[in-house]
Image 1 (tube, rainbow, N blue to C red):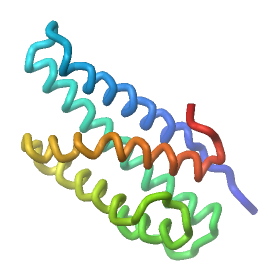
Image 2 (image 1 turned 90 degrees about the vertical axis):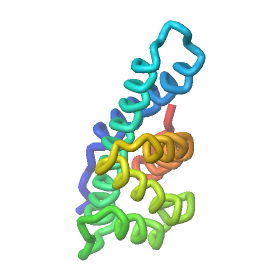
Image 3 (image 1 turned 60 degrees about the horizontal axis):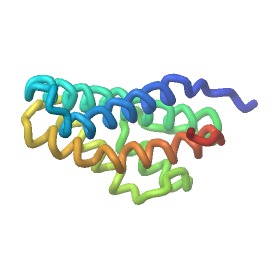
Image 4 (image 1 turned 120 degrees about the vertical axis):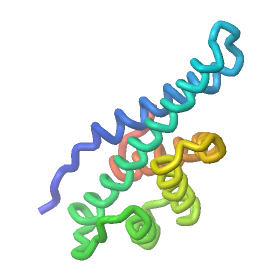
Length: 143
């Protein structure tokens, strides 16, 4: 029996990340924003990345178990991405997803400016890859 997975949280978190990242990119050109405002926008992007990343791997885990019927799926993102790659669910190399996992770990444990910059530099690719994964898992187009 194939179950239906509710992807609404995944979709919402990705959409919010997309919007706030666009806001972040535009904030650099806005003279009406203080540096503190720009920093707050950047921090919001990081938080939305963390939320979206967590949604991605948890939905991927459910897909592996409920749709593909895999019996033993670990409860940790990195092995889940490796299993997803083995099952041809990822459009980019596993290493790219592992770099997102590392960025997630770094931002969660240290709000150092350099780690935030590294995470922010990954956002364009992460959003594109998460969007592609969303489409693969749901069969829906992203619009």
